[in-house]
Amino acid sequence: MKKGIYPGSFDPVTYGHIDVIRRSAALVDELIVGVLSNSGKTPMFTVEEREEMLREVTKGLPNVTVRSFSGLTVDFAREMDANVLIRGLRAIPDFEYELNMAQTNHIIAPEIETVFLMTSLKYSYLSSTTVKEVASYDADISTFVPPYVEEKIRKKFSKKEEKE
Ligand code: PNS
Image 1 (tube, helix red, strand yellow):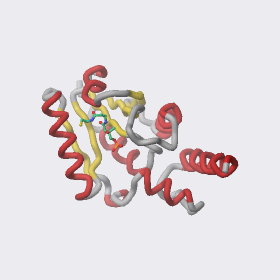
Image 2 (cartoon, helix red, strand yellow):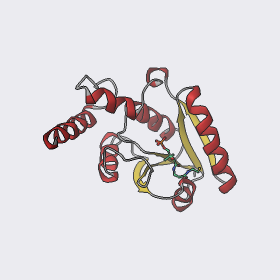
Image 3 (cartoon, rainbow, N blue to C red):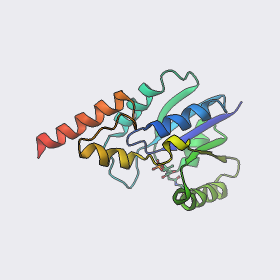
């Protein structure tokens, strides 16, 4: 049985992530989307909110589950008994970081294979950071994220405005 993990920050999940989730779910028997809770970055959404959005947008995929984790991704993979670590690659700027991470992970946990999926051309420009930036100017983000996520982002920004 092939069990995969797809780790990330997902702050928030975009159509680009969903594309990778769908395609990798077709390659493994079980896919666990791992939401990193202790990243150095300050996220817009709490780990619970990010998990909840991911569960909502992946509810039609029966072999996909969503879990949060802290610490090393390979420790999470071992804990989940997963032997495949999935990452999406958008363009050349992603490559150096991803290569470094895959090689480091390979040294720590050689039994776990990193598999890269090239992001579909349609989403090659897309990142959670871009989505938040565009949304901060109240511009349309419906081509970047599902309506459910769009609503959550809008609510975040309106709460922020209320505070200011
Ligand atoms: O969505 P992101 O922010 O590109 O995901 C990055 C992530 C979560 C995969 C990466 O930061 C990660 O694996 N962090 C956990 C710590 C770790 O295992 N680092 C890799 C060894 S250097």
